[in-house]
Image (cartoon, rainbow, N blue to C red):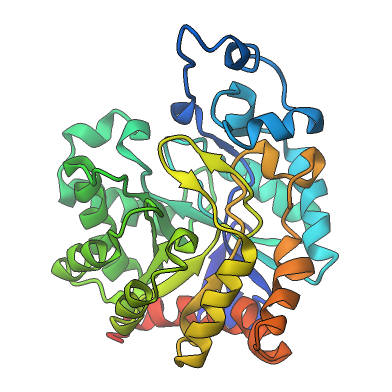
Length: 348
């Protein structure tokens, strides 16, 4: 057992309960906005309109064209959406919005107090396009010191309990590698998990683990996010698992196609991959979540919402052969074990 730092204070890891390990409640992903081309008249009509459930079908295949869809900006909506999660027994959310994409510690604290959900806040920097200006001129050591200071002293009186999501894009830029190295160094000092955003349709997990290892960070402290698009690549998943990393399937219910990337795979395909990992003895390294980061993923706009994993995906896992105990363990035992492993610095 270890203390997990939430936005309202420390919580014993044994008390976390069902935990969604990769979500967003408040963010501003304006850097992702896609400017339509001059000949895209229909797309231009979506740029400045508010998101509605009626627009969801259009935005499922072009989610970043609508500026309003690129942010989660309403505390009241977040509290209402979390009711769907707690109504299914949910207890904890790991909120991985970082500096540069709208992290709001005070808002997260308010959401936690009003919803009754324990919220673990992240720290660090996302993809290079969203890095705060100071990141470009800072060294690895300076960034690591800054992260450690946030983790120990807090921001606006609120302490992060996790490093991430650290952004790695398809090009894995020098700036992104610098941030990853800083995050790995900070992990060693702070003893909290390091969560890394992978470009899901590429295969960069091994390189991420290599960089972290070069800085002394064990794979057992690293969560590799967005592995759903790799669900049909059993060899890749096994290689990552064999190194001791955590495999985060955190695009559950995400029925969207992302320009320049691809379409999120169907939940059933992901469930089949997780069932195979369980047969191979890797169930203890699997994490589940939705990565709700745009409005069209919220239940209020016709999306899956934060209760989808419990309502739909866990039963799907049992249909693929997991026992009810095994399926529940992915939401309860594994998130707890992530925090405990990071605190101990297990080498895997």
